[in-house]
Length: 440
Image (spheres, rainbow, N blue to C red):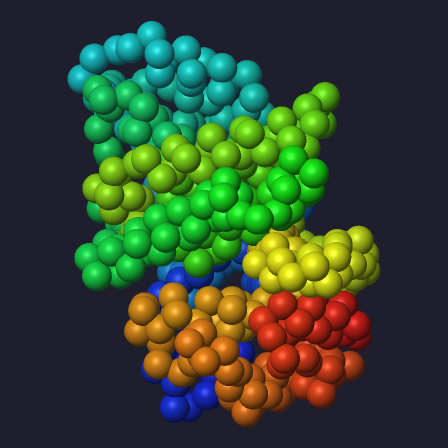
């Protein structure tokens, strides 16, 4: 089974070797008919006061059969359930009177003002749950409610809050506070050391290359600070999607995004200094710290939100024209970073329609062909040495993506004749314009 079959249910050439590697952020926006029907039944049964039957249908709605992310066990005294989100496992219980959800975040042998203050601050931000310390000195996040008040809507947001905050805080707390220890992470799947090494080398290589270009390139960065932004954010989004880090690195990449888009009084040049510092922090990290954050997990909730074609079109229109000056003045790397920024921004922030997600992933397979080759993908769409595209393979992929999505998107038409294969920047520009003009 090919990569698109595993990730997106799409098409891939029969002769392509596809390692079982996940890319990008998990999204729960691609649910099928089975799940939506279960949601409707859950609401109906709750209104009929069949609470446990309602919850069984609710967990059927949450279940992603590819992820195997939900386990439900019915016993005489009620429902017991487990929900997986990243490195954390939520456990819970529901009966006719109440529902309780809990996720253990970390274990501590001694109390510390630093992490206790941090969690106290977090409690003020939570709406359905709270951080606490259990009898075994485990930091846990807990949510509970009476069944009468525990509608599927409320249960969804409560479990989502527990899951996403537990998953985010465990790595951050463990990285910052030495007295904390991992807890209940036996479900986390390790990845091969060779894959970790490739990802680590790629991270260091790409950061070093961008920092060197920004510091020593021929373009006057003081005069064109926007060029720096495009390169830094393109890199941040690309690393987030292709390397799929957890913990400190993931938080750093998210902080880069927040720093630039913060509505404050800082100029672009001032923000570039902050972005440079964050990138340098990643460069200075030890290899073993990176290796600890490269692992595979199951997820239930995505943090990206759905987006429609109009917003995709408007965003492309607002940014793509900025390529022209850099192309005309022979700064191809900066020009290429602009479509990379656009594509990365979509993947980082949104759950785009399925065929567009497949097209964005294929873009990375073309423009980052050497990285995919190092991971074991044998079917190259671009040769960086002679700068030649495998046009036939790319066109075959477009035909396959179109065919695989016609049932849900009957007006989808992927016209390979629109693609400019004269160079990587021109390819990237034409690729985005093709996406912009799709009838989704």
